[in-house]
Length: 224
Image (cartoon, rainbow, N blue to C red; front, side, top):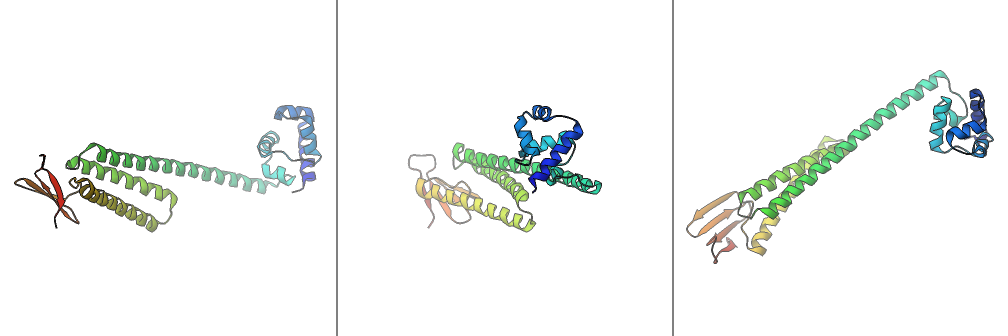
């Protein structure tokens, strides 16, 4: 980068406008000395001022940096580049919006699951229903987040499958801990068999017997 060349070009542009250094300094809200140092090649404009100079002199930033005007063809190429950059910027904004929406969906899904665990007792089917709904919303949000971040469809599918298995594991472990540590019935049982003084809760991996439900002598234990 030739600072002297850039300075001479800036001086030439100012003279074409038929203005003094003082007038330019006032328009850019800088000192006369700053303009003088640019035109003598002792200093270069800040990036933010390059944009203002480009607009004021009706030249491109690349022309200022190169210290000379480009051909018409080069100007067209610069315009094409600018258009592509603008489109790229729009795509980036859309991608960021998708990431925000997917994050909100995931957060909402987690909120529903936590609320279901906290509000509904284990023997209420509504707790498991809302937990599954929350899990589905979480998975949907996770899918869209991966879609914005990962290009290959196979990777996205594997990630979503992994997320589903993780949720399934969390539900299974939480149920197991509820039975073994807190003597509560499993929330995610696929079948309940009622008989005299007891209820049999069947899950995919174990069966739990709830004896004397709703009484002081109620007990919950695994079937051996």
